[in-house]
Image (cartoon, rainbow, N blue to C red; front, side, top):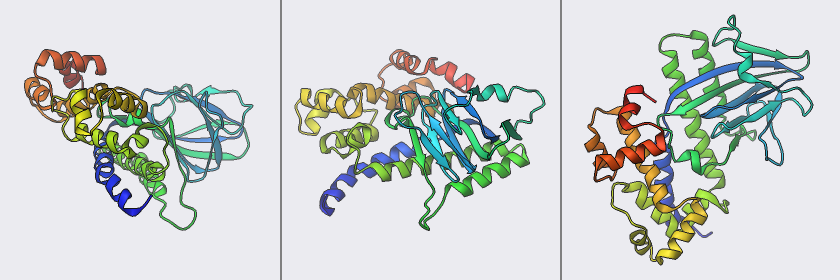
Length: 319
């Protein structure tokens, strides 16, 4: 790709990346420090994004259907983006124990180490689960199941280790402010990890959202939706803006992005609305109008379908 073409692509790609990254905000999290000795194997699943950082030792992460396990060594970070069931283990033959069964014992301190396994080589980790401010963050659908970040072993910056040191220090302190500090550190962990993923794959992705962003027509359409989600977009209007027929635009958008244009737009709107509900006292009519809904009932119906609660319930319960 020549420099002129790359500059043209970045004219819409960089604002898109920045907008998606800006939507990362951890609302709540749970954090653990396993200290396991081989042999061991634990299963994990949660309805949120999960991360595992190896501080010492080695292990592997497996997700059903994945062709090869992901090998994790000291300094590696693995993010299971949508929190689906996975197994972390030292090898293929150990009995698998549900990780959360290990932490049910009443004597275990919340922030203390979790010890499990045999008498072999130790592996220590920092693991956590992070719920975003809204459950319809675009990242949850555009990223792969697992992001594997390796420390730069050629002398470059290792940004994972300092974040883990700070998280561990806050867990040790256990002050009233520690939880908020750790959540903000987790924001930084996810932001850096997703930036690294984008940078590594933005030129090579052959399918999915990153490939869609590189496509001139679909990339520009995505930027229009992200910059002006409140507009009364129709598929034919989007198609005309990027000089495609309606049918060609709809087919290419769905093929690359993985869902129809208006469905993608709805998630953008509800994400923006959920953020407003969490961070302001604005009335529903004002929020509905700001994100592109002409009536409150239509907004409430759409919000309830995606979030599983009405806007009022979402605001009251702090989901």
